[in-house]
Image (cartoon, rainbow over the protein chains, first blue to last red):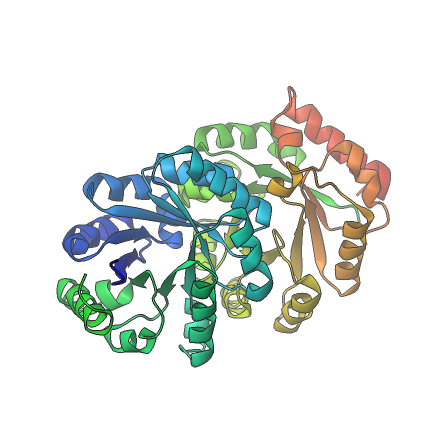
Amino acid sequence: MNTTPELQLALDYVRLPSAIAMALRVQEYVDVIEIGTPLIKAAGIASVAAIREVCPHKRVLADMKTPDVGALEAAMAFDAGADIMTVIAGASIDTVREALAVARERSGKTVMVELTGVRDLDRIAPEWKTIGVTDLVFHREWDAEIHGKSWTDDLLREIRGLIEMGFNVTVTGGITPGIIPFFKSVPVTRFIAGRAIHATDDPVASARALREAIADVFGRP
Amino acid sequence: MNTTPELQLALDYVRLPSAIAMALRVQEYVDVIEIGTPLIKAAGIASVAAIREVCPHKRVLADMKTPDVGALEAAMAFDAGADIMTVIAGASIDTVREALAVARERSGKTVMVELTGVRDLDRIAPEWKTIGVTDLVFHREWDAEIHGKSWTDDLLREIRGLIEMGFNVTVTGGITPGIIPFFKSVPVTRFIAGRAIHATDDPVASARALREAIADVFGRP
């Protein structure tokens, strides 16, 4: 069993041409390419179709962070070519269920619950499990980050708890090569990096450095 | 003091041309025009600018339901011409604070917190109050609605509690002329109607019927 975590590039852009350019530049070095929520809102679902078109061999994730009308938004994302879409943790259980139902009707599609801002994880996670959620994005959010909140042992314990419940857990928020060893004790499924790749002088080198750091800590695929 | 609730049209579309056509058709009979979350995701922030362009004399609400990067998404909405934007209740308090800060830098802009899916209202509402949130959207969400959940006295009590805390409360989710009397005891700020206007044979007559129902219950403006 291969337990080396994958690497996901988050296209944290609000302009599609720049996002396309970055996707083309580093796609070879990542497993999944994510169209960020602000880019979807800025440029529309066409941004998902665009990345699908120029990166036909990569898995594409539409970070919809769907808050309601789960079936409608899941269909919108998958119709545009996304392999994976996200529902926000604060959405009602009915919304998550609706999105999951759409994924099940199709082949190879995944819904992830995105934990940005969640305040009742202990209570809601078992409900997600019951309705068939398999994948979570554990997100130390940006607005918390700029207010000085960093990765802590408490967050690590939460991640471990979710994995022990049987969820595949993807981790995001300030992921750099230097922070990867911090996650050594938790078998996460995937790391997401945005600025640590695309906001550097050499995005290809940065993506490769992240891959190396992951391999150093978790073993080679 | 005029306490007659306003009427907001929700453009629940995923195609911009149809949304523009409906906005033009009923704008005269509503106070605020809302670009729904799925339309923003489908057609991008250009959908907000488009409604702003064709309805220059109406207040425009971008239902961003922002889950993170509050400053970025608030600026995106206001730059596109929105007078009002929403942050999702599940967002971290930092995200709400960031969006509010952007609204305060500009003149006449409002951030509303959208309660879709919220599970800890009693705990979080006082926090919103502390950081200066003034306006809430009380939302009986669609995915709950199709699972048979309807307006109840419990929901009415929650709305009354929020108004007593000093919030302006807008109400949405299955609003029809027939349900307006149910809200007689709570001085809500605005009602939002989507399908009850645009999915009827005569949207203009439907919007007028809603206005009449509001005036019958709350008095004329």
